[in-house]
Image 1 (spheres, rainbow, N blue to C red):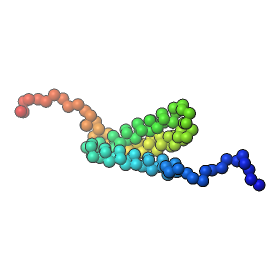
Image 2 (cartoon, helix red, strand yellow; image 1 turned 90 degrees about the horizontal axis):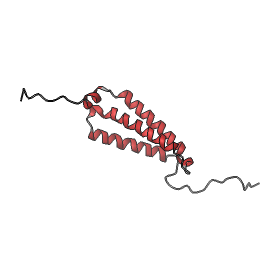
Image 3 (cartoon, rainbow, N blue to C red; image 1 turned 60 degrees about the vertical axis):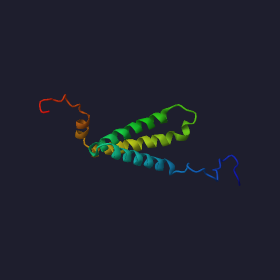
Length: 117
C-alpha cells in the first residue's frame, strides 16, 4: 500500500546542506580566528581575546536565531547550536587564560618623566 500524503524525502541533497556543514563551518571559523589572533596579538593575551571573541560570536548567533524572519525555521536551530558551541569555547578559553596580561596590556601608562633622558 502506497501513501500519497506522506512527505517523501528528496533523493538528491544539494551540496553544503548535509549534517556536517555547520560543524565544519564552526571549526573553520574558530581555526581562522585563532590563527589571526596568534599572528597579530602578543601571546599572553591570545586566550582572553579569543574568549571575548567567542562570547561575542555566541551573542551574535543568538540574535540571529531570534530575528523574526520568514525563513527563520531553516537556520534557527543551527544558530542556537552555534551559540551554545561558541559559549562553551569562550568559557573554556576564559578558564584557561589569565586576566593579568590583559590588564597590563590595557592599562594606560602614565606620562613619561624626562628626568632620566
